[in-house]
Length: 98
Image 1 (cartoon, one colour):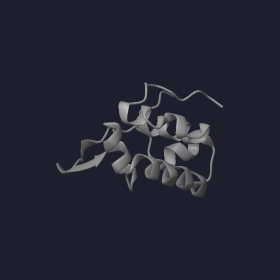
Image 2 (tube, rainbow, N blue to C red):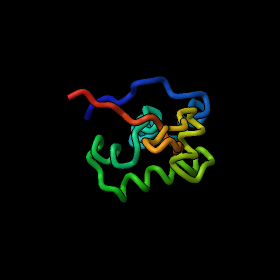
Image 3 (spheres, rainbow, N blue to C red):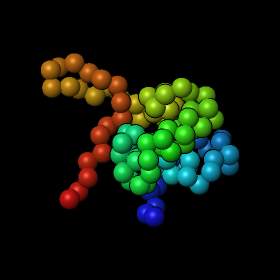
Image 4 (cartoon, rainbow, N blue to C red):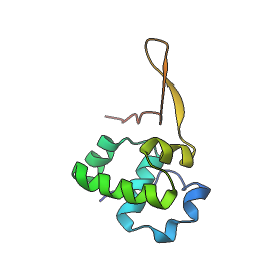
């Protein structure tokens, strides 16, 4: 398993870091790095149901109810421009080097 920590976890997470399982910590680090649900599944080689379970527990511990809420709490939620000139809320997409 690769180490996933790219950035130190933000202050709201530092308060609950001791309450997280190692897998929850990995999922949270990936979310903090801008990964979306499907990217987390591929990175950790886990099924969608398992990721949903980890995210649900993280939402509860962080006091949010969605991935966007978690991203907002982590301070990574941004307005992302769409090709038609509108915006959507989300984390900046991960750009992988090939």
